[in-house]
Amino acid sequence: MVNRVASVVFWAFVAVSSVLLFPVALVIWALTAPFDRRRVLLHRFTCWWASLYTWLNPLWPVTVRGRERMDSRTTYVMVANHLSLLDILVLFRLFRHFTWVSKIENFKVPFIGWNMWLNGYIPLRRGDRDSIARMMVACERAIVRGESVMMFPEGTRSRTGELQAFKPGAFDLAIRTGSPVLPILIEGTADALPKRGFVLRGRHPIRITVLDPIPPSDFAGRDARALADDVHGVFAARLAADAEPAGA
Figure (tube, rainbow, N blue to C red):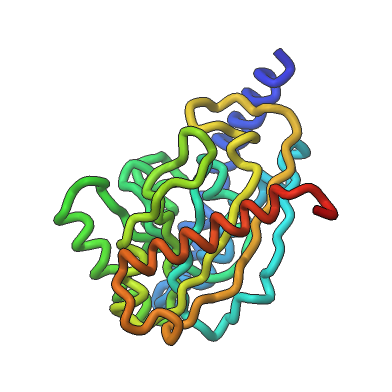
């Protein structure tokens, strides 16, 4: 019962704050659009907006490790594992500039989705080949502009919490653009907010770990499928290491 009440309060706060903060985003977009082509200021405001929901929620303490591995002068293809709707919020805690690739349904959410359009994030209709082709072109253009691209290579949230197979799209993008791959590991969000539900489940620490970037020289001559499998192995190895008892 306590969890249900806390959930109602939290989602009500999300709804009310979104109504209040979207006009601020709209003003930032209108004032900066003529000179801020990459929408850096608007994205930074969006990072702050999204981070409110973890900063103010004592049930979701977030730790970010390895932020120093991200070079602000480098354009990456960022790839993260996907456990929960909460992943989207916690990745904004990186406070680094990137362009999201997200399913088209998220862009239809009032206020939050509208802000995604303002930011120029890239929509994707899953299973639609034409949409996938347009997404890849938009991602290449973003990288040419100097914007990193954030993708979930599993394609959808894991039902079990286990790491799923990676699709090759993000890695094809890295190969075609000669961009380094930046793996970002998320842990704890599946326990905090499971895939099939909106009820908060008590206090669950969440951890984001930025792993070592993989430079293009490391995957020269590899195809996207092989690179996807290699990076999947990096995630699996780190998850296994984090699961080991201290001192093992």
